[in-house]
Length: 212
Image (cartoon, rainbow, N blue to C red):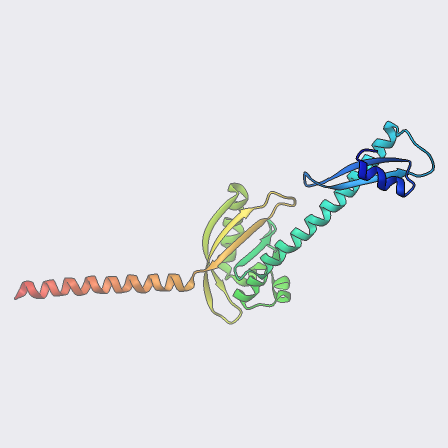
């Protein structure tokens, strides 16, 4: 037994021999796992040390797994509550996951999206492009960015800017994050029309002045 305080505490509890195993979680010191012998002094063998170390490793793995699960649950909550379109599809183009943002943007319920799949969000031409063009391209290159017209349940068509990537874990699939840029594209068109009208007006004015 090492340490005066620890020795005194062990003796108060009738412990004759003690072995301490450090427990590390994610590479950081977490605590000490102690095994004591109360009947008589004991010389701990190499097998004893290995067994105690194994138990410490099991405890460490359990704590790490629990911590990881908490972190994943927290991350999942953040992703799920995001207003952006976030989804994961398999190579066949079927939904494996979608967050509340997809429901909000599309106007469909989770049950409707699960039953209808990604195909219900796009017209036939766009669905053909997704399955025959975009998915093979992403699976080959690893990522891609593109814009697609998304058809809402109420009939509105929204322009979505997608950033898609192939996932590294198995089974392989495609993750996608999208922003609704409908208003941005509308303003750009209005500015372009206004610019063209201003240029036409300038040309007409110049022609008028040249005739004077």
